[in-house]
Length: 375
View (cartoon, helix red, strand yellow):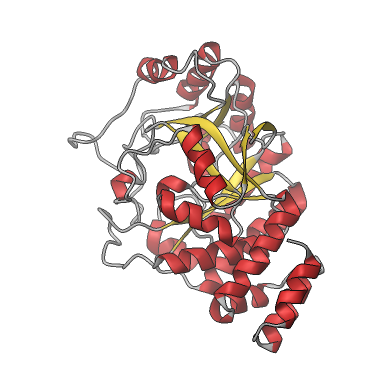
């Protein structure tokens, strides 16, 4: 949508002076302030947010909406940490715990040897017995089986733990993983950066500052990454904007983030189950404000496994331009937290249909957004 057309719509709209001022900044490609970001969360009309978010999305990527063909490998759900929001963590001996051997994970990969998947996403619990050598071996052998796939693996929290265990700096740990075939980092583990909120929801985990430092280091050695936020629990709008501001500042410095992924708190089977999940309309508001505020990150992803297919499609009207991948029922992190997609699998044709039915152009991509197939 062109700026001229948006201005024509705004001229007829009943919006406040403040809303109009912010809207004009967005249309003039001027950065909004954190205070203005909070205002958009608290006061702005949802239809205005949708209009501005679509403008930003189409300025970046036109009518394109991206997806890829990927699988997840989750080595273990045994974890040394006890994050209160987590429904995935298990202890040794729990009936539904798992800790796959390297051989078992390679067997999973072997099933996709003659397919057209382009990415393997590897994350899991922080297992007390797994180490850097284990994961280097896994990546090397995985690349032997699937030499053309992009390996996106290990949250900053996992990197920090395995590097410390190997008595290496995080930079040295990242370099070793890169030399073994690591191609990029996912965005998990960011949760929420505010120290007081982080203390209440994941006090044992690496700090938000360390998460940012590890991603900065990754970018500086040539490893791109994604970024996330966990929202909808005990944080406020100010905490969300503070989180987005820190991501925006790091992107100004490194340019290494490919995409931002808001992750909704789900309340099944965790220590925050007493907190109601936010309504879907709040999810859409969050997508829109995020798209408007993060003016330097090219892609905004709705992780369809977390939202469900119907609401992931809805998010396309609020600035989202990426739906993640086909996944092929290879992740349990959100299904264990009670989302409706108990068996997360979607074919490429289904993704194409969802995108086309929302009046956008489906584009298959690789992990760093090179276009593979424009439909």
